[in-house]
Image 1 (spheres, one colour):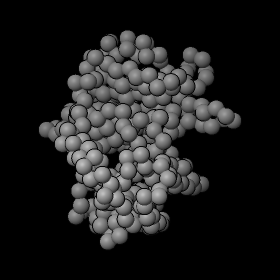
Image 2 (tube, helix red, strand yellow):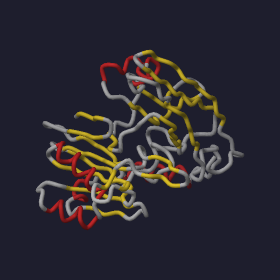
Image 3 (cartoon, one colour):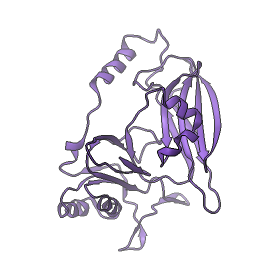
Image 4 (tube, one colour):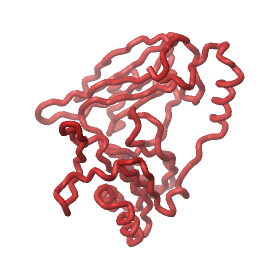
Length: 287
């Protein structure tokens, strides 16, 4: 499995679990649009939600419609699955320019093409075979979460479902040529034990040990292994959210936690910051 900035290629006797990013989510790791299982195919996503430009009060796409010379703003995101990576990548960009009806018509002329398109107003369009690749959420984890929310009745002071923590940070832009930094973001409890992995952005696994703290924890902990198909990131501001669940999908108890953000730019590791955050019953909703 090769992940090149959100575009995936899966080959051989291997099935890769993956999710498709939601262009309308408030955070990078917000609720996903789809959860899939991919084998011997390529996945490409293109959209204007990460690489566009803010001009005055309007957000303009970086994708230009060659028919008009204007930014293609009607499509928020297009994900294409095809056996060939070049075809998947080309169609994902083209589907950001065409209307959903035109994209559907084009897809029928290219065998093996499946797609998921979200328009700027939130409407979703899928190919006939898309749902056949979908993987449902685990019923067991849903039952466990429901049990924690209802039976415990907060006597153990668990995180409440209507609370979330929003984490904002910025990847700086450097003049000239520079590598995009590897970034890892995770939550630790007051004993330094990892509770939840929120993000891991990298392109070459051989350099992962440069994220020294995260790599040491990764070798002894289970993290979410789903690949994410999304538009390519660029330097700038990003947000992640924590819904109060651990890596097993269960709500944590109210206690003291540390937000850990580690980055390695040009293979020079830096622990950006670790901020302690105390969860209490007085925490404002959606804070």
